[in-house]
Length: 389
Image 1: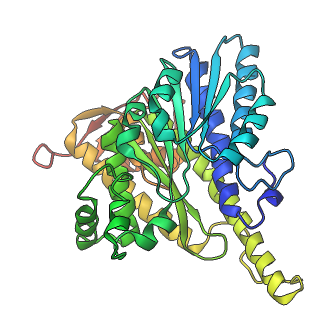
Image 2: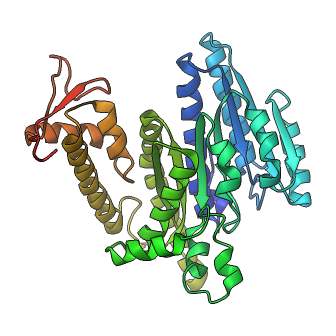
């Protein structure tokens, strides 16, 4: 269990690690428990460790990953599943790499290896390391030092990827910086040229700047890896109402999106809690005393979050309508997948929205006497007329 006190002054990292810890556990269990896969490979492209607030490095992505993978292995072993885990950690900084090696050595049964160097220079080695295993690739750079084209051989494997899209850094320089060299430095993260015109077209079409930038990156990632689903979750700056970064997630299976959203539902609450504490700490630092009756909103959903969720639910309804207009018949899992690509739309929401669509006569489907909501394998029939389809 992560301790927020380890992350004082870097609460955004707590949220990132909260998400990683829970999603890695879920994807490993779900992938291996069913029996379709017996090997799982985890790859951390920019490992660090950096700025640990705990003497045992428990607040680093390396420790979190190795601890969770071992816990999953033991759990599956008790259930009679013989599975193989392995992990690859790559770090370019020599000083950080020495810490990395010592940390990995504390997990002798992890099947983990370390490489010192630029990740993009070791793509072939990472490809061989993953081999035929299901993979989760975690790309957490400083700034925007990600090259989608270089990553493509890994993105095309049978697995998933989470990329830290450093929006705060990118946004400061993306469109306004007059230096040609700075503008050109964004070509790799967007996988090539013409990204600027795509962003400007989205803005001209009514999207706000942030949504346009993120949308172009997600589309480029989708194309680079031939992913069925690409989505994200927003991580805020601790003290102000602005985005710090997005964890952008790509998968080929609707179940992955469902698990991602389940984790997001918990992470939203955790994020708001640590941000409230950070604001109280900052106020105490300024005034040199702690408020006995702080007027800060208690941890929970802020008005901005409620507004974002409402917009996402509206977008999910629109997506369901579009799917119903496109297909005469489809599995409920298809509807779940397309709706759950929307941030802040959670698994229970997707089922409720499908029930709403049946009430509105968009679709029809049968439920057994014991069923209250559609299952993934429920067959959904569109009632939208052929002229509208």
